[in-house]
Image (cartoon, rainbow, N blue to C red; front, side, top):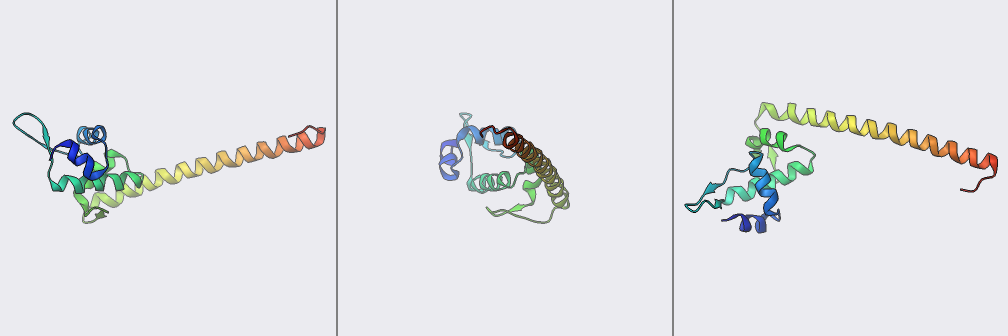
Length: 125
């Protein structure tokens, strides 16, 4: 199948599919005319990529993990690299959550202070 058909079957636009190829996530064959040619396994691979992206993994992480992926969901099995990469990503997410919580607390503090100052001076909010 050509890229348009893969796009239709996976609901991923052709531009993104070419990006996945550039990142080493997809390796289509080429026709005699130079067109990309995809097989049924590529449909599964694209679905795996989409699920892993939704989990917050980078395309670099995904390239590393795809050999461990089984099925569309995907189930990740059998690779020692898998847990280390996912734990690293989880750690980065935890750091981002912590930073967002600190920002939220600081903003809430400023809002409270501004509201109190407005109440004390009789200013309207």
